[in-house]
Length: 253
Ligand code: NAP
Image (cartoon, rainbow, N blue to C red; front, side, top):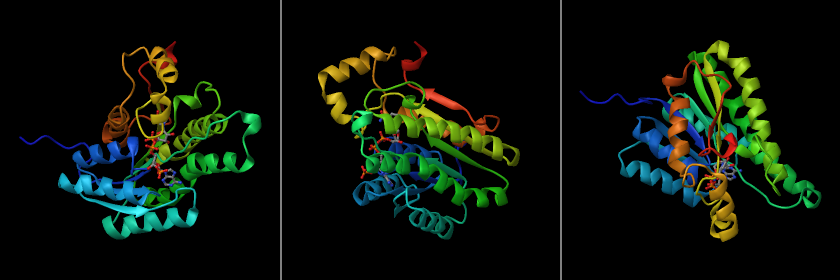
């Protein structure tokens, strides 16, 4: 008997799916039977993800989207509805980080990080929730970070945005769990992607990351993608407002 796919016939929007964790999530979702809208502001990255999915005989489209811009987000979700007819899953994954001491952070950098990482969760969720309510349910997975749980030096705006995602996830779960929209978040530890490439290339930083992670390796995008499949599938129907920490044990110490 053929194995039952965990996201069979589901339609998923994955933001930031042109790279790293988002791309791995898109590929694994597709292998589990979902149709994917790849939303990213990177043309090259977004199109590459779609090509990879199509090579594996999956269904996907790319929509160039700045997730911090309401007009872009609304258009992206409308294209998803026109193409696939519904939206079952939203993964709010797109994110950026900016480094520096808090007292030297410009107001514009602060706003950019908060807009891309946190406001985007509000904008994308606001747009898709009405359809999910009409359908009788849905799944939203927000990608936070362990930087939303514990302090990290020199990334104040990032920590604030990721802590905000955790608080917003709990609020949204409370509001929509009664109507069968599951809303949860994931808090990754250090994962090898474009975002962390330069840090990991620095021997001192790598040593710090490795010595802070009890499990004897750094994270891969697939580690997060697999956890996201669980939160996007029927397997997690009774899970609401949870923070699923996937960090090799960084935060248990
Ligand atoms: P990544 O490889 O840099 O991927 C992020 C993707 O989001 C990129 O394709 C990026 O495009 C896109 N993006 C950035 N701003 C956008 C916007 N305004 N609109 C649409 N797309 C946008 O990073 P990643 O490590 O996979 O990160 C994915 C998520 O995981 C982020 O929310 C990040 O904070 C979170 N996370 C990562 C780690 C880690 O260690 N890697 C740890 C904890 C949490 P460009 O490349 O063109 O900018």
